[in-house]
Length: 95
Image 1 (spheres, one colour):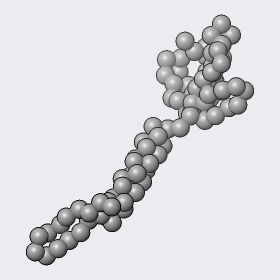
Image 2 (cartoon, one colour):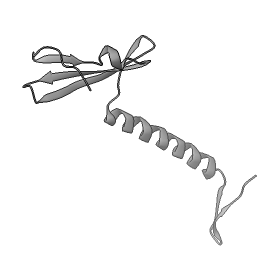
Image 3 (cartoon, helix red, strand yellow):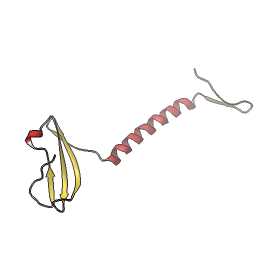
Image 4 (cartoon, helix red, strand yellow):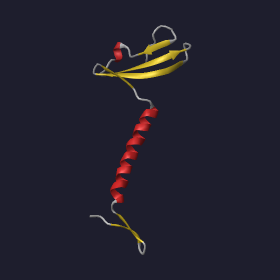
């Protein structure tokens, strides 16, 4: 699928001209032998602009942060509605 450039320590892998589309992906790799490569980064080009692909860790961190922010806002909105009475315990009052 990818076409390797001549053997060196650091390579860029890209698509051949026959595979061109509106979205291009580029893998920046470190090649230690003809059979072993280590991916250093993945980039994509969309409408002529180059973007660095986020890591899985970065994606997970952003999703968890966004989810926790939403849960925090929901808890804040609901905490106003909670009432406590020593004789009956907690109750909810929605206006």
